[in-house]
Length: 352
Image (cartoon, rainbow, N blue to C red; front, top):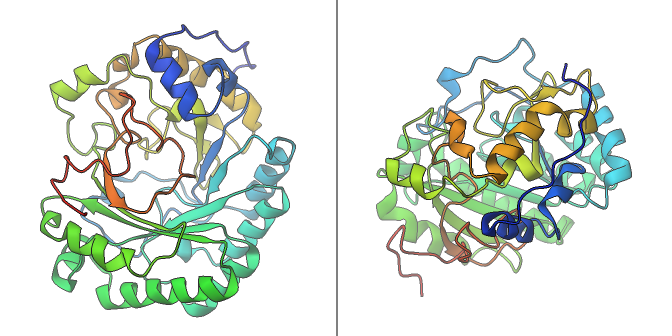
């Protein structure tokens, strides 16, 4: 239980804070203390895969494996008065959301509360035709499928326990069903670039960009360090990002299956707890001392005081891909003001 909410601070008018305000479409960065713009809700903390870049073997999760519907109902009720401010609710975090048999019902609750964009990311293995149809009928606005290979051998080496042919077939069927049942829904295909699949990134992008529609996107990005927990960030990156505030503590609230709120999406074992949504309101947590302290550190060039934030670029990675996805939070510019989509130097690709 956090202490009572405090008055949000006035952040210094630095260049980094100005750029971050622009990314969040606000005039002053302190406006972000009003309410989260983005939510990531872990409805399931289990997974049917064992991907090589995932931290699942290190998880120290609570007793619940699926979020109680009461928590989603509470979330919808609290978001409703702020629906015009909230940009997006993503119905997954660490687990695989298609294991949640009530996923469509959760989407419907959030859409009924006025949430403009409800999305989730999936490995695609369980995206059956009937499941996709339910999600379309519920009002899902966006689905992202992770596909990290252009061949069966590469994909299944990374996405352990998954079937490449089934995931590709399910994703093609998803696009077909979307076109017929809910054409306004967007589909994104994402690849995590790593040594095992770098030679196939161009082929992944070329294969999927010919199958996606206007408004969809296919992109690749380097894997991240999970806030120095998967591997240590380089001293060069730690120095480069030292005075650049991360977008996450100013925009995004993560809620796990039991209602626990961690620092960010990298904090999978909640080493830095921000609050407990099961017993507190969103506003109490968002304006409480833990979040205020972290925002103050980031806005004042002191993010390196937090080990998990040292050199972390999870929301500032370069992307390479086809078709722009303007609705994704924070992709307009990097901390240096450069467009993120179509930066190709990181992967050394020529997609023209």
